[in-house]
Amino acid sequence: MPEHGNRRRKLNATSYVVLGMLSYAPATSYDLKLWVRDTVGSFWTFAHSQLYDEPARLVADGLVAETVEDTGRRRRTYEILPAGREALREWLAEHTDEQAEVRDPGLLKLFFANFGNRSDLLRLARDQHLAHRRRADDYSARRDELAPIADRWQLKTLELGLRYERCVEEFWAEFLRELEDEQS
Image 1 (tube, rainbow, N blue to C red):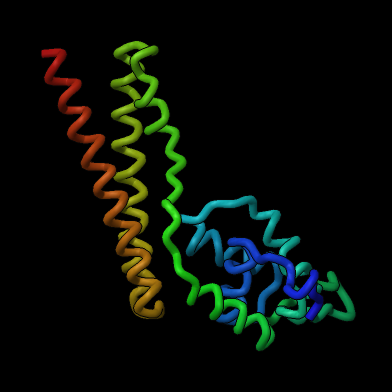
Image 2: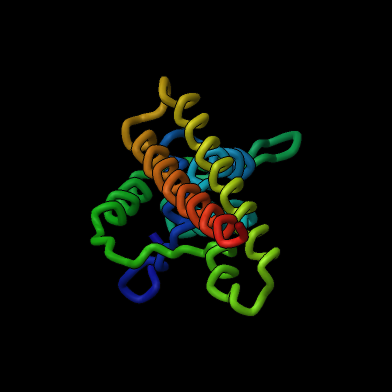
């Protein structure tokens, strides 16, 4: 495996997303984009263009193998190698204590709401309440759809996503009632 100094290139979250997805089955970059969109994309966002670049880097690192079609569109299919599975296992074993990153535009707007007007604040509360309800409903539907085929840990991930969205939905519903009560 290519090394930089005495270690391979530092892998990032996208690297592990690709390795994890390829652990299920070989895939093209397009397949990866669809799988990510339908699974971890609901809680781990990044530019999907990275799913076209990262597999080639993992090939260069000796963690993934690449097969190119001889004819037609010459699609590239990627398959995880034993070294890639080991890198994924090492990452899964690492201590994880970083603070979760919440990049919520609604929460950011709420923080600065003092500089806006009341109608904008009411609209923000309504929009956020409905948006989080929709996301919670999407998690619930996805869980029901995947329950027969997903593994236990995938279902636990969906459960946490659902709980998170319901909790945030409840916050905005309460806040909206508070604002409406103040108007009465």
